[in-house]
Image 1 (tube, one colour):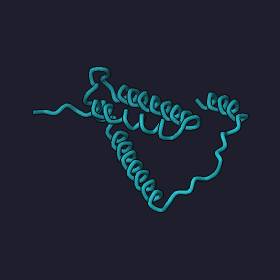
Image 2: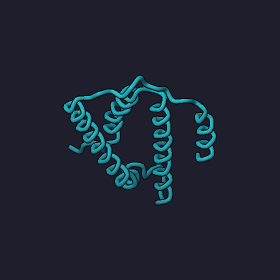
Image 3: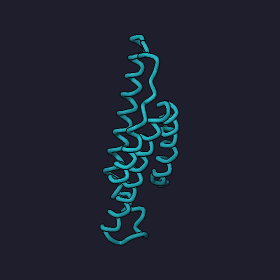
Length: 125
């Protein structure tokens, strides 16, 4: 992955970033609103990240025990999930370099809701 990054970074290095006409002037109320939204989004993202990172091996052990009988196998499954997530982060970063923040951020956050619902354990009644 590191070699691929170096190759892609060299290609993109020659491209000049798009320039804007000038810095946008925001009121104090707008800045406070932006700060609040980013604070909540970052806090929620951090909680989700930590919860899934800590609980994923145990959840995989309990729910996917039919796929493997060893701790090594569970570790490999978790490693596969982390690799997919790392590639997704690279893709999102690439999109953010080429698109407006809102057009990337909103769909990514909207996808988290149904995917986290699918990952939730079934309710026992």
